Image 1 (tube, one colour):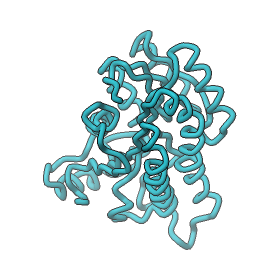
Image 2 (image 1 turned 45 degrees about the vertical axis):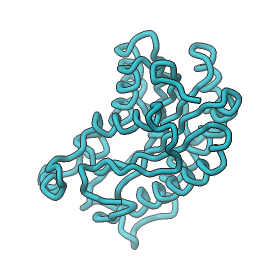
Image 3 (image 1 turned 90 degrees about the vertical axis):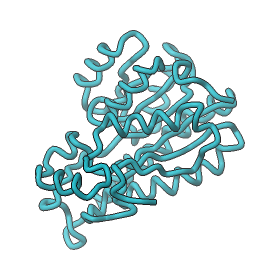
Length: 254
């Protein structure tokens, strides 16, 4: 079974700003109903939902709290019906600043676990809350957001990268379990994006260096990464699951 994008009801976690906002905008552009989840970015999320129109709704929930996620999904269902598609984009507060990063000698277990709580436990909470309706419908699309740092840790952001590596593992094991139910689970892994709040501290010289190292001679934008997410949700990807698509202008191959 497949559904065109304009018949899907899409939950985007962490949709108040940055890549999440671009993903929500891309789905709305294609006619989908969109739920913009946010934790703290209330003003940004509400403003974007208003801009996207009556088929969009912003709902607050802490992705690490399973009860809040279930409540959010029930609220969305009352307005739009069951969720067909989940994009797990939420990111714990982070700044990609290589000079200020934690090293192996300064990294605390608390900081490491904070990234895993949002990336991995958050994904588990959303899947557990949304997948039963997908199974009942015989259709579901789950897309997680990873990073090319797992393949090429050019800057050793230990906490962030380890969480995304664990999320990739969960993406693949979830694909194995949910596939027979008509649910695909895939990951889109970007590189450093130009520009989000998380990458705002990155010097221009680093962006220029990355651009010069890619075959496309450019740094990927949030809008470009968002379009790759649409692929996994679309009928064109109906036979694809358990995959990790790296979207970084060709900086990392494979």
